[in-house]
Image (cartoon, rainbow, N blue to C red; front, side, top):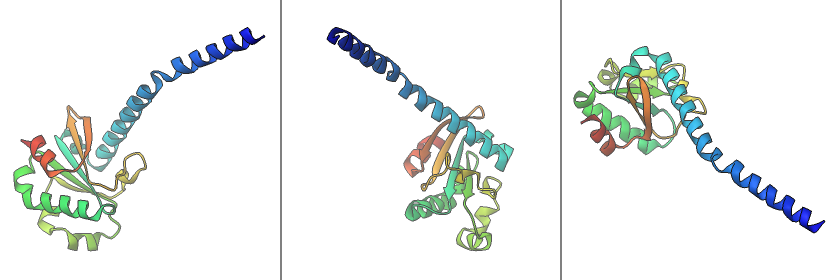
Length: 157
């Protein structure tokens, strides 16, 4: 009887080992594919031309306050250098009048600046408390990163 228990235990351990081997990697890849697909859908819902951009910066209204103000300031100050390559989407805007007072009105009038009026980027699979940079190529998401001025400069040059 003990040989049978030992054999069953070995079989159980072997089954656990092989069942867990590739599933974590597969689940991570599946999650990324799903997130990228939802990101494309959200961008198209806001404006179909967004997926033609090289880079889209998503700026939430709430979250890391310093991160959001730094990203907004950097983009408003440098938009003339980057507007051909970068689109900006503000999401989570609850009070448009207050928002327009906080952000430069000339900046908001640019063709490359959008407001996510339906808050697609507040979806639990897409939301972040940090500004995000979405890199696109051939109308497909290639990466999503937290906003960083150094990385942005590298991506647009």
